[in-house]
Image (cartoon, rainbow, N blue to C red):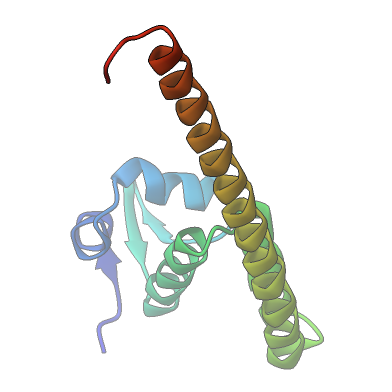
Length: 128
C-alpha cells in the first residue's frame, strides 16, 4: 500500500475536481499532509474520499456525511456509525418514495390537463 497520494492522482481516480477535494479539506472531512503548497493524502484520506462520494451519490448532505464520519472516529464507534447509517438510509429512502409519489401525482395532473385541452379543441372543431 502506498504511503501518499497526490491531489492530481485522486482527482483522476475519483473523477472530481481539485476544488472538490480542497472543499472536503476545508470542511474538515479529510486532513491531507501539507508539504509546502503540496497536499499529500494518506490511504485513510483516500478511503474517506471514497465514502464521501458514495454518501453524496446516495443524497446525503455534507453535514450528514460529517456526522457519520465523526461517529466512526469517536464513541460509539463503528457500531454507532452503522446504526446511524441505517437510520439515514431509511430517511433517504422515504424521501425518494415521497418524491416518486409527488412525480406520479404531477404526471397524472399533466395527463388530465392535456386531456382537457384535447377535448376543448375537439369542441372547437380543431383536429389534433
